[in-house]
Amino acid sequence: MSLFGKKKEAEKATAEKAEACCSSQKSNGCCGEPEGQAQVQPAAEEKTASVKVLGSGCAKCNALEGAVKEALAELGMDTTVEHITDFAQIASYGVMSTPALVVDGKVVSFGRVLTKDAAAAILKKVRGRRKMKQADGPAIGFFEKYLSLWVILCMAAGVCIGTVFPGIPAFLGKFEYAHVSVPIAILIWLMIYPMMLKVDFRSIKDVGKNPKGLFVTWIANWLVKPFTMSGIAYFFFFIVFRNIISPELARQYLSGAVLLGAAPCTAMVFVWSSLTHGDPAYTIVQVATNDLIILIAFTPIVAFLLGVSGVHIPWSTLVLSVVLFVVIPLAAGIISRIIITGKKGSEWLTTNFIPRFKNVTTVGLLLTLIIIFSFQGRVILNNPLHIVLIAVPLVIQTFFIFFLSYGACRLLKLPYTIAAPAGMIGASNFFELSVAVAVSLFGTGSPVALATIVGVLVEVPVMLTLVRIANKTAKWFTLPQPEGN
Image 1 (cartoon, rainbow, N blue to C red):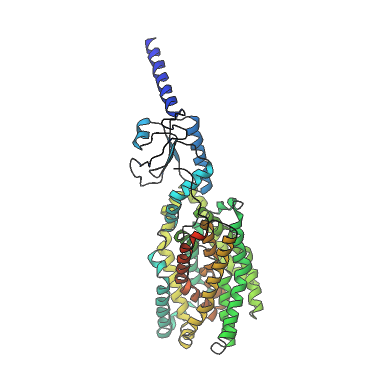
Image 2 (spheres, helix red, strand yellow; image 1 turned 45 degrees about the vertical axis):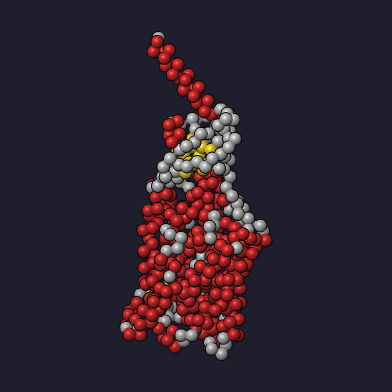
């Protein structure tokens, strides 16, 4: 009997201790609003991703845990929430009032029960940038930063190969199926597949949350950009440069510009969003919806604009190009993502699997450019100035679409974290798709393919300029601050 008595006394002492900690004491703010809040430092900086709720397990502690789990699910962050009830561990974080929230080793809130939205705001601030970097590596890597230089070097190498060793492009030209270059198709698949892996199409369910930013993106990308690109390119190629560019070349360059204008950016948007401190979760929704719209809108828009320009192409060839370079990589990316996340989790996908393709994507792009430029040797040597002339309308269009989308977001009073990516996704181009379709429709040696490659040449320096502009004008917009301590 004495044993049972001691056991009951121990249980009673434990319960009283928990009640004392989680009662609403004004002296220490336990589970309530503290009178004063000092800056809390973590016991030790944690290198791995973790989310912890500190508290004895009272109703308020459990409520905080539930809100945090909902916020993590909404943001697509695959992290288990650990509930710490041991008082010695809680004390090691320097926390004097519970419940408390610890994200990646840092105490971010204590003495209050956060709502789901407040928890999401804190998680986005603490982890948003890190999550983007995990998925894409550095904000902008060495290769991406100097992409224009690599394009110039590939141009020189390709022209030399095509001039000195003409047998090489002639040999590669034999490997075609349905007017599609098989070597280039394989290389482009290697570039596009990793891009599709990065897009979590489960984010589509969040379309209804703050739809204004998405409407700006969709309207700018699909109802404005293709048509203004066609108009600006026509104005320069057929009017301003009419004494320098022949009508036939002008028509071909215009076709290349149309292909660029009808393909809004996919993968590089994550880089531009990260550099402008955009909302990672919202950027994923913007990219995912644009990738799905491409399936429906790209073919009719391109066919219409090329037809207006006097370039008639069979719909079957255009549809085949979209199937080869959008549908197949998109389906492969979705299936791979489902299988891998099911077995390993999304964290493993973004930190281990996707980074393996970084060098493959780089090599694929460089080899594609070299092969195309090897077919372009004669065009480039005969018209070296045309590279600059093609770039002029492309650069003007990029700035125009950016400021159109960016300005529209400001008029709609959208936060900067949504406005910056909205401007970037319209300004940048899905040049891998544009190059692939140009090669399929017009051939590797066509001026159309050359025009799309010039888009690659000007992409990075122009976009980095827009990044600087966005960051300097962030004060024009509302900057939401996360709730909590």
